[in-house]
Amino acid sequence: MVFTNIAKGNEMKVLIKNEETGLFLRENGQRTCNREEASDFKTTWDAISFCYRNNLSNNAIVIESGGHHYRMPIRCDD
Image 1 (tube, helix red, strand yellow):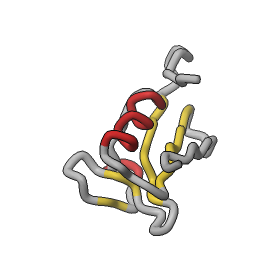
Image 2: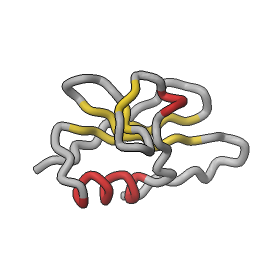
Image 3: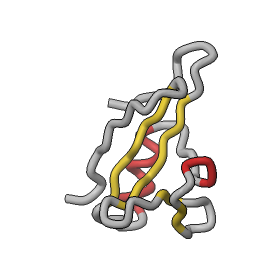
Image 4: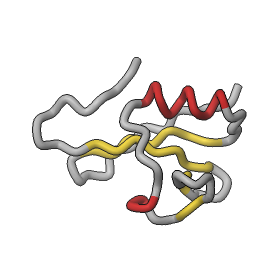
């Protein structure tokens, strides 16, 4: 299932988070603890594809929307 931002006025972020360190992936390939600095993949499909293409293990996809702390981790490794 692919999640995208379909609710009008409701900003959604799709992030990649390392489950061991708790750090988010940045655009430059570095990691950060700051969600605002993290790379936003826009859709879960884009984030999952990135994880598999780059052999990222022990990472999760984190979805945040509406200023709430709703999160749905999805394992990227086998």
